[in-house]
Amino acid sequence: MVLSRIRDKIDTTLTPYLPLIQAKVSEVAAVMGSKTRALTGDDDKMRRIFKTAHARLPFAIRIAVKEQPFIEFCMRNKARFGADDPQQDRRGPNTPSDAADGER
Image 1 (cartoon, rainbow, N blue to C red):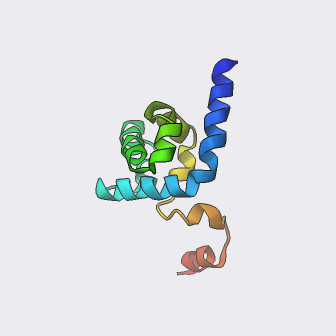
Image 2 (cartoon, helix red, strand yellow):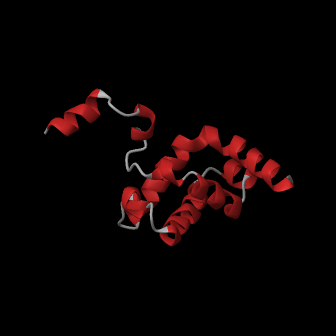
Image 3 (cartoon, helix red, strand yellow):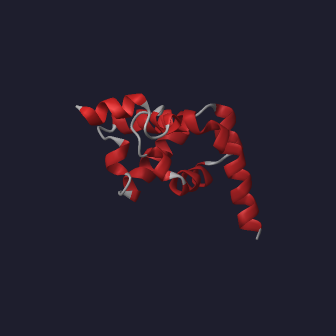
């Protein structure tokens, strides 16, 4: 019960920052020479990427949410990090740019 309330508080705190977190995760993955889409099945690498991304977040976010809870939040939401383009998650499926890619 207490853990679920803590988890809910972390989710509420971090969810508005998902675009920033997605950008940092993609940035770290690129530096590591990987694409986030290719890593979604490799939990160990994803945890390392999330750990490094946490260190690159603004100070206020790092203070509000410590590293381990941040990693756990990211692991719960790792499907959202499957897109290498942080904008892709916000566009949604079947947008004109997605349709054009499928017709080539």
